[in-house]
Length: 295
Picture 1 (cartoon, rainbow, N blue to C red):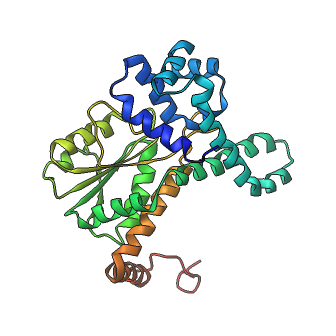
Picture 2: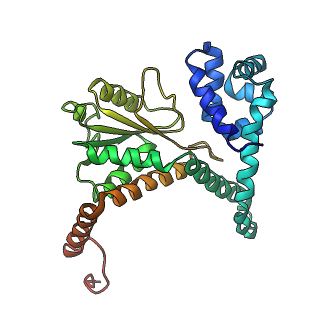
């Protein structure tokens, strides 16, 4: 099977989504947000998970030019088979044999697959475009609420060493919107949010667009909320074996963006990083057995 068929199918779904009926749009969004499950599940299970009927899934397949559900699912199923063949190096998991091994094996295998799928969704051109957008901006803001705050904080903490204009919002007890009040077209907002989407983050995204800011979204879907149109979206997988989202893929994609910032930041970025490290050493930010021997 042509390895590009899945990519072409996704592009077709995105292109036609706005013209579909609400039920067909719901089915299309489910496919885009759950590519792996869609590739594995039979039609009845897909209907249950997506909240539409089997007939709606068949209608969607025909709207997209396929003969039926199985023909629509085939490219996604083929991509999973290819991915599983590439992930055979996880054989070390078989060494885990104690009472907790079953649950931990499943979680470890899922985390590796999530990272692989998330990275597979990126392209060097897209990552470079986001990094260049950030470097050219007057100010770059990153926001994420609840579980996503940790991702946003780490990205800002590390990224600020290479890019001085990078800052996290909200700070302290304010709201993100409070700190975006003086922004404009020269600024960029990076918003990190996953299902179920944070109300505060959606409001910040909408406000940023109303101010003319450029918007980069790191999410599990390109369709986060009505009327939100990102300049770039970095899609990640977040499926997990437990109740909460797995953020391993999102962290891996943000690491790509950090690496690109350092690369194209050149000597200026390298000098800033060196200055930060020297300052921390001078002010004993890091523990040393030789200097911290009071006990």
